[in-house]
Structures are given as C-alpha cells and as structure tokens.
Amino acid sequence: MPVKIKICCIASIEEAMMAINAGANAVGLVARMPSGPGPISDESIAAITPHITKEIASFLLTSEQSAAEIIAHIQRTGANTVQIVDELTAGTYDQIREAMPSVSIVQVIHVTGEESIEQAIGIQDQVDYILLDSGNPKAAVKTLGGTGNTHNWEISRELVSRVSKPVFLAGGLNADNVQQAIEMVKPYGVDICNGVRTEGKLDRVKLQAFISAVSG
Ligand SMILES: O=C(O)c1ccccc1N[C@@H]1O[C@H](COP(=O)(O)O)[C@@H](O)[C@H]1O
Image (cartoon, rainbow, N blue to C red; front, top):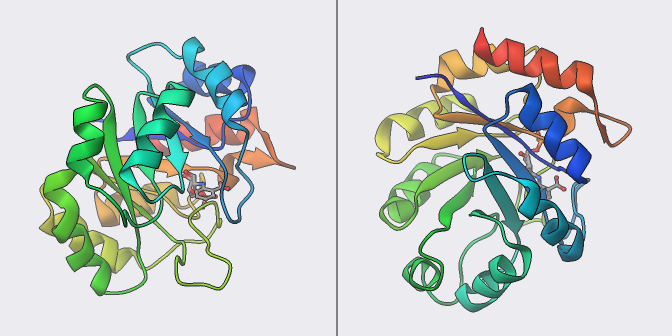
C-alpha cells in the first residue's frame, strides 16, 4: 500500500489546494500551541475545512488536554480528524468518540526514549492512529511538534512493529531523508511541516520533491 502523505501547517485555502493537488492524502491545521511555526486562528481553520473534500483527511492539531475542550475545539473548526499533540489528562478518548463518532482520533507520541513504546502500547486500543513526533512536552516551554528535528528512528521502528494501529512518522522529514525513514521505520504515513516551507510559506518545489521522494 502506498505510504500516506500528510502536509501540515496549512495556513490558507490556497495552501490546502496546492497540497491536495500535489498528491497529499491529508492536510494539517495547527491551532494555538505553546511554540512552533504552524499555528493559525480557529477562525482560519474553520474557513479552510469546508473546502476540503471528504476523501482528504483534515487534521485539527490541538494542544487541549481535556476531552470536553477537545470536543469543543473540533466542533468550532469542522475538521474530520483530530491530532492530540499532548497527553489527554481529563476525560477519555471514548468521550471524544461518542460526541464526534465520524472524527478519527490521532494521538501524538513524542519519541523521547524507549518509554515511548510502552506509552504507545498503552493508548493504542483507544485511538485510530498513532503519530510519532520529536517534541518535548516536559520542557519549560513545551515543544509539541513543528520542531524540524528528527528523533531516534530505531525506537520508532520498534514501536511500529509492536503496535497494531497505523502509525504516521513526523519530525524533521524532508525530500532527502524521507525514503530512508520509510525503509527503516515502515510507517503507514509520513507527515511534514518545515521541510516543505520557505520563509514560512508552502514551497511548491519542495512539496513536489517531497511527494516524489515518498513515492520512491
Ligand atoms: O508546526 C507547529 O507549529 C506545531 C506546533 C505544535 C505541535 C505540532 C506542530 N506541527 C506539527 O509538527 C509536525 C512535525 O513538524 P516538522 O516537519 O518537524 O516541522 C508536523 O507534521 C506538524 O503536524
């Protein structure tokens, strides 16, 4: 099966269309975050999601940590997939699913060490997808993605082999390293923000190079 491609940090309808027309299966819309280059307002996200057809996944990236806040966030932005970039600390995944049955749930695991494998195994039955990234939720100013940094792909590879849910790989990918990452980690999909941007804007040349590199 071809590796799915998610283009993240989409900031406008035009960027969403450019990504989809180039071959993306999913686009990521980053809401308020403690750090990172991608955030746009909830109003901007709500203006973009109606333009994305059902066969394309529209990911809302949320830093909310309670089920109630996450449900409200999905409702006000209209995405068909929610990417939870921090730990869920109040309420349950089941509450999100019951409130929003058509929305896919993606939990991010920041690969900080071997403990990330047990973390993924612990939540896998409650989510639809796992997404591996390179943030540090324990930093004084949390990083929850958009770092442009890779992490230890040996750990990611082992994690993928030990969970039964599809896994997206993110963190510092670009046209030059994505094929090696795919061969090594064997993810279901790959996800990118900084690697397809120039001065913050989606770069058509980098986008096409990345998509060609994923296809091999
Ligand atoms: O981009 C951001 O600002 C951001 C902030 C907080 C959480 C996630 C964020 N972006 C996501 O991070 C991954 C990896 O980005 P990169 O390729 O390493 O730059 C990206 O897919 C976005 O989904």
